[in-house]
Amino acid sequence: MVAIPQLNADDCAHKVALFLCEPSYKNYLELNRNDSSEDSDICWRDLKRDVHNLAKLYEHTKQGNEWAIKILIKHTSDLDGGELEDAYIALGESIDIKPGLLLLEFKEQRMTENQFMQAVEMLPLSFVDDKKGTLKALESRKRTILSIKDAGLKRQKKLAIKVLNDRITE
Image 1: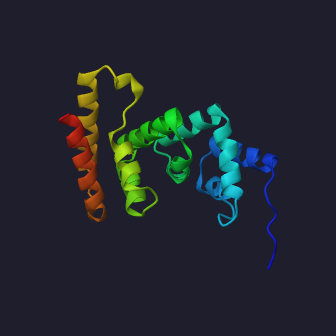
Image 2: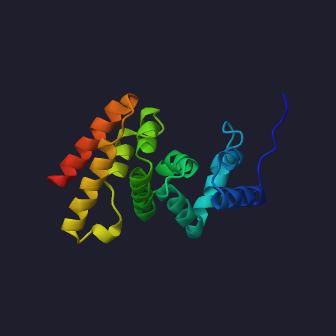
Image 3: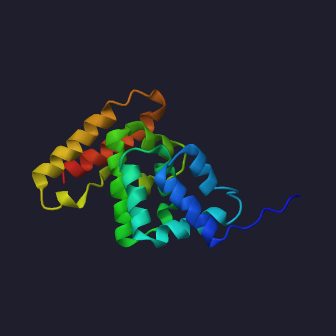
């Protein structure tokens, strides 16, 4: 058996920087190298430590980048407070760009039902005092989810629509 060297902070900083500059499959794999060790958690801590890094991750997620979405979902349970809310906002906005991706991640059990429901209904803070805008955004997200044709996502689609309908009728 070959021993795999542990990452040091410099390795992680480099991998995080590469991923945030280009959140690709290759850089995703590099960031999550040897998932059985603590390496990916060490690199996550390096990413999370810097608010600018988190902001970049959220932005890539909002733009529907599959690899940013996967990283964020994997580590959502490590977030709390405002960071967690920002993560759910970013994941929710990703639905508007690539609607089937978040539903697929939930189907493949990469996120809990509660995490999925939070992401589906979460909107940016700019909607807090804008009831009309909130309803319009929720209705738009609902139409986007209804447009998903993948029959394999039927259960996830149904739950997402229920969450949105519940929020709309509040």
